[in-house]
Image (cartoon, rainbow, N blue to C red):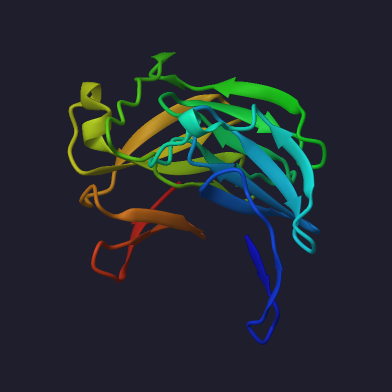
Length: 201
């Protein structure tokens, strides 16, 4: 990890334990990192000097490194960190300041258990918080949740207040990438460039 000056000069280089898979900013001076590892491992580092503030999970060894992104992190309204696991729809909330576990949310679907996420060789898609709503969105390929019998890219709406999950068709191909929620629209990058918008509520 390199810290660059305003002029593009490398001020500091920090060696990380594995390839980074996901990242988010934790105000006022923290950066949270998740890694391409088979088991979840998260670090918070000081954005000014790169020093480790806390870690969650076991530090990965060489046999635990993988080419896929299986774990996703994102920040909620309370500046705590949400960790999504590899093959399910459950979320672990970590204290943004200390890294301790504050709780876990297991989402229900249609009054039952949410379907398993069968990634195979695919990666887990980005997840983003919808500010002020206690809701997060993710995007998954319909082929990774075959029990739903849908096609294309699905927008996953995770309601943390009700502990429920919904799978919403986007009309987009599986290759589109969710990058955030802007107002009442989810924003996606097309495979060959350009943006697409899908209404959310």
